[in-house]
Length: 253
Ligand SMILES: [Zn+2]
Image 1 (cartoon, helix red, strand yellow):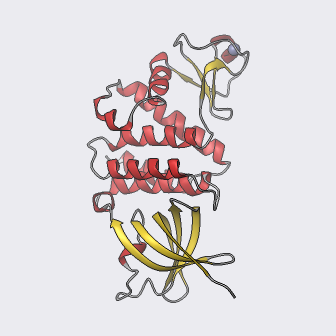
Image 2 (cartoon, protein in one colour):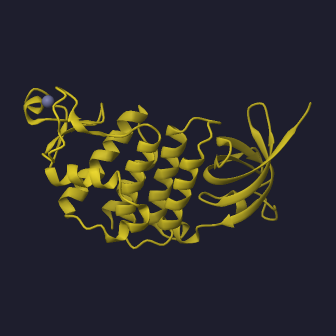
Image 3 (cartoon, protein in one colour):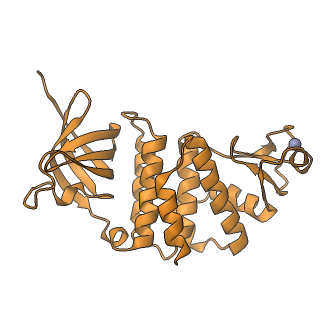
């Protein structure tokens, strides 16, 4: 059998034990998209792969392409993101982001722009003073880049322009706004204030590097946070497991 070896850069999204001493990794790679790879012997304390096969770690890797599972041959650590791993709240945000990545990105569907955005967001999660705001930004922009962009310009019931900045119901099933008259005949949307709608519009165009200068009222922030999470859960079509963990950590902060 001909084995193909390839070199790529990647971020470990998920780690599961396998067999006696192996790990199965879900990796977001720069050139191959999301892949699953087995790291043989990675649970042995003296393994060369032990430190390079932990969640969030950015690696340079040599990987054998397999029929179903790839095989991690070598891995050099580029960044361990230790500040994320050492802080429970940051870990909870990062774990949720990783779940969004493997739920919303197809396997072996490379997207370098999305990879670089994910990496830039992890770098900021490692150092920001406001991981909650960063996570709202990440969730909205990451989903938008994958084609799940909330439609905020027109009412998704009647098509009327919503560009005036008015409040509207946010329909998580369709990912859009309803004008006030359509809201009256549809009870399933959650109403977003004008401030929250404006904040969402701003986040969709805002530069990640300038996130720390963004100021907004706590109420609008909470509305947008909850709206995006409902949207993500509805679009994924199944419960997002790490969201329960994140909510329980947030509740104790
Ligand atoms: Zn309408």
